Image (cartoon, one colour):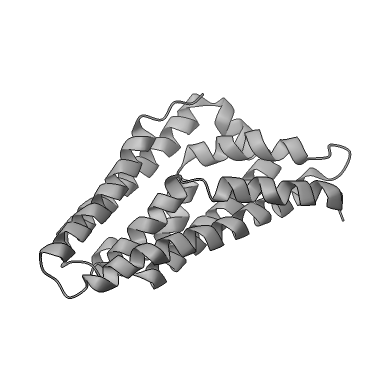
Length: 204
């Protein structure tokens, strides 16, 4: 075991506290739930969780520190992520409505993975939070992967549940009408808001 169990037990409640704090990942899953219901929310949450684990791997290999230290790489990732989120918002508005947007707006799992990977703030967060629990005298990469897995598992559950609750509204308005149209606009607004959040993100 590359880390102390006491350290891991300390990390778990800290990570859960972060998971239940509303953020971009949670809002993404809410948007998926509003767009296509609970199954899409869970798939989107799984994609986000895998993206978080990939970030932990990247940080453990030292690549994350290089990205965080180079403004050009940071900016490229930020703008790619913002563009992808805006594209999703447009596709949702162009779709036929909640429950029928999947073919045009993409796949929830893929979208969750790409949105998470193209969010440079996640890279900075992993590099700022996880090293506090790392034992430098032991192998670093396995520790990053274990802590990343804990974070991702907690996020998978919390974001999936919250997105599923949003999916209840989608089921209610899946038949169409004015309510469905407003739900569609709300879903698109969430993705557009996440894009704007990335656009105005400060490296600090």
